[in-house]
Length: 370
Ligand SMILES: [Zn+2]
Image 1 (tube, rainbow, N blue to C red):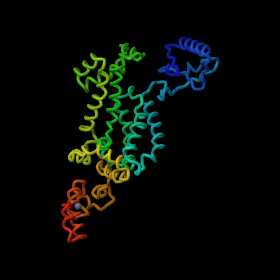
Image 2: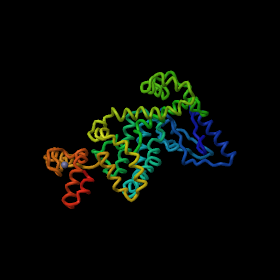
Image 3: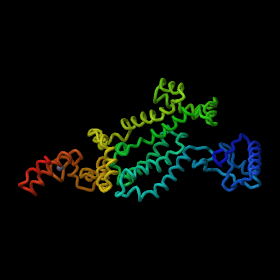
Image 4: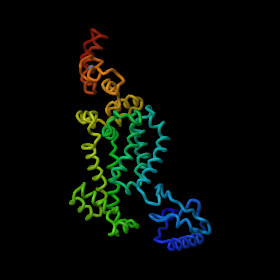
């Protein structure tokens, strides 16, 4: 029972009929009425046709037999398929994202404000019930794809812009990778479950021995692989282990993602690390809130930092500009590709020459840029 929602779990149809009779009596006694159209009867890993042949009633009203049911915002099908739940979750997330798009794309709203909406409204709905299927790489990948699209929107580039470095984007926004977030949540429930005062503690303690892989066994095996046996033993011994376990798992997986992931091979990310740009990310986010009048410029600054700008060498690589600009800078006409580091080095020289041309006598301004 959760608030005014009731779930009846039974091993056989006779048990279910008996439970439904009891619930009917209980509701009638309390002068409550059941919303029959919102209810559903289903069978997990069984024959749904057999269930369909029978009549199911609560307080004399027919209860429909369903193959899918949504409970507490979780879509379940009769095979208890994780993939189905994740797909549905992504579908619903996309609807929310569609509604939030004008807000997320609006460059005049401070970036930090838009980011807070992502962190507090969109992200939790995406990783809702990830305790169930966290630590699963394929699901993490699917969820990451939609979150990447959301973050690209916030930074002001196309949803599928390929030049943006994803690790840089997450670092700039201070968001851990989806893989680490969902793994952390599952680890937390695994550590907390046995001491909870609900039926979850029984589920965690009474593990079926006839099944090779269960949720509890798989979680432990995963933790042993990632954290090592001594760390896991420590968690099992101390009941408060769950509090520190979640951030710890999150940290380990996120670090691994930042150092060995497939997306760390890009030039943008390597440049980002080389110049230690992560040191300024929090300052940039704060500035967008303190100087809302400059939010557009600050968005551009972040866009450049994560690779969301098109240099001439990139435009030449994708065939928009002539081949020669792959290795040549159109600004100073030397045989150096136009990259962020080149722009930073040359900026002072170019500024000085421009100022010298505009104010030939005023050497003090020109020196300021040298
Ligand atoms: Zn140049």
